[in-house]
Image (cartoon, helix red, strand yellow):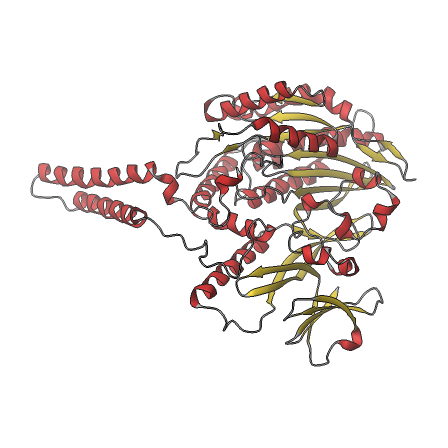
Amino acid sequence: ILIQHITPEKFYVEACDDGADDVLAIDRVSTEVTLTVKKDVPPSAVTRPIYGILGTIRLVAGTYLIVITKKKKVGEIFSHAIWKATDFDILSYKKTMLHLTDIQLQDNKVFLSMLSHVLSVDGFYFSTTYDLTHTLQRLANTSPEFQEMSLLERADPRFVWNGHLLREFAAQPEIHRFATPVMHGFITMHSCSINGKCFDWLLVSRRSCFRAGVRYYVRGIDSEGHAANFVETEQIVHYKGSKASFVQTRGSIPFFWSQRPNLKYKPKPQISKSVNHMDGFQRHFDSQIISYGKQMIVNLVNQKGSEKPLEQTFAKMVNSMANVMVRYVAFDFHKECSRMRWDRLQILMDQLAEQQDEFSYFLVDSDGKIVTQQEGIFRSNCMDCLDRTNVIQSLLARRSLQAQLQRLGVLHVGQRIEEQADFEKIYKNAWADNANACAKQYAGTGALKTDYTRTGKRTQWGLIMDGWNSLIRYYKNNFSDGFRQDAIDLFLGNYSVDEVEPASPLHVKKDWKFLALPIIMVVAFSMCIICLLMAGDTWTETLAYVLFWGSASFGTFAIILYNGKDFVDAPKLVQKEKMD
């Protein structure tokens, strides 16, 4: 817990639990950050508790400080408290906005609403004593010097979502302990019991902040080899001092492709023709091999229709890369499991079984001795890396857990997890919650197919819910994702607000047809309905009116669809074409 003191000249932040006298002082005029002592805090300061400093960001009105004002305990990892940040405050250094023009005021308001939007998305986690950004295996293979570093220094930059906001703090080691690295994703913890033996079971999903964004505006990879929607998911078991962990990754198909929204329900994916895909592809897998060892790609996209070229290109590129560390399996999830045949997923599990046994899992005994290491990883993907991917990951994780619990002596020989009704329910619900969290963060709604993950069966109600979620996804992807993408780009520092920028990118003049065509369509459609309801003197007259207005509304609708890209809500801050 920290205590924040606010005066007109400075923000003071006092750490009140470690007996230290240090107080962080942030000058609201010069923006300088220094260390001072408790007695320097004026008694007139307004005081309140806060739970962490997220960092600072520059907007049109000047610099802002973002702090965590509410938190909720998720549980404990090896006696370290893990928290979810549930509320934040964005504080202006400037005491007045009189120095801004009306347009600047308006822009500043939009930028503030973008920050509020990112912070309102569920899934920001932190700990003041434990490094949440690393897997157990990475933490076990570190040097003593690493253990001495502050959490901010040693955190994996891929998973620190406020890395950009903390860049000024990072430059001053003496103030690191006031900075809170925050992870975005999903964490759940459960104390479970099988055969009267109690163990802790945890699921941690870490979303990468490189090439982060929303579903249709961020696909494929960037030139550095960072994949869109990249998530590292770790399943941990803690029993009598022994710890076991199994790690998997998911990420967009790693070459240059895009799928811009254009009002169609499913825009056609486009593979870029103008770039050398191999450079980025190679970079992606080089970094994956360094982080995780051998790679087993599990590609779940359709092998016909618009997804087919993506599958073919992926297979071809793995072949031409000819790296013994990278293997590839394609499984047409929708075709194999059509007509509710979900039992057919066993075909894929059988195909991957030998590979999974070879990769093993990480296990350290109660004396801290490493028994086994995980030698490789399953990198699963579908189009969004959400629904299909999560189903397969939950099955692979269960197979690993089966082996771990047997080895730890929790399960008897011949016993199966599926038969442990209480645990199975916890397990399935946790994986479905994981799917929902990842889907909300990327696609804007809960995941599809979670009825299978929760119950092991595909239900009619599940299909109805999938239809509803698909509708909401359609609306958001076409009419609000530009704003969501801009918000993420601002938060992560992909776009920096320039105080002296003459023309703000927020003001994009809309073409005349943007307003005129929808109005014409609505008027024509209304007239068509009116003519139907208020019939003319003869049926031929009525038919002529209906045909005229009907064809007018259909014609404008066709023009709108043809120019679909002009009617969707596109990002304004970072030119996504340049990023692809």
